[in-house]
Image 1: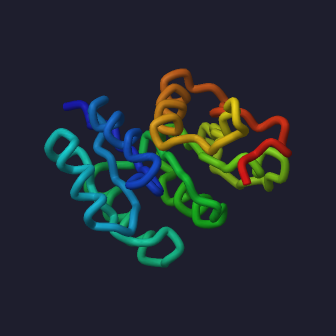
Image 2: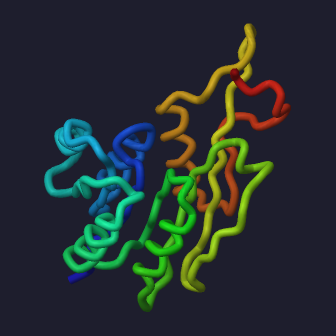
Amino acid sequence: MKRTRHALVIGGTGMLAGVCLYLAREDFSVSVIGRTLSKFKRLQDESRPNSIFPLLTDYDTDYVYDYINEAIKERGPFDLILSWTPNYSALERICEMNQGETSFRLFHVKGSRRYFEDEPIGIPSLCQYRKIYLGFVMEENGSRWLTHDEIANGVIKQIETDETVRIIGKIHPYEARPK
């Protein structure tokens, strides 16, 4: 029997909630790291049964690694990791924990400033690293940050097209960013 694909979404109960629901519709088992039980319940209510698995913790605690190990034991290694975290060392450790015999994709969501001031991240050889930069939208009266739907739709498009780098919205001119 073929194994169900397994995704890990770090920060998946807020702006990436729509991506979690998309992955569940695409027959992934989705392990989601987040801090708010009510947001997990909403995700589970909106998804197909037994597709969203909450890892109720903060990614900055050591407990997160115990939860991730348990998720890997129960549902297999991650085929896809989607992360909205500025903590590169935690993300590196999670990728190392996921090392197996097959490759996996890491979609790393970053704010627009990281496009200009990024730091390198150490990833395993079987990890296919993808960057997603979140920009802003220019409007008649100035600029605004992206909505959760715009972010989720851009991330979903990135997952489907599998480009190395995607910019959602605009990042230039930098001075036009919303205040």
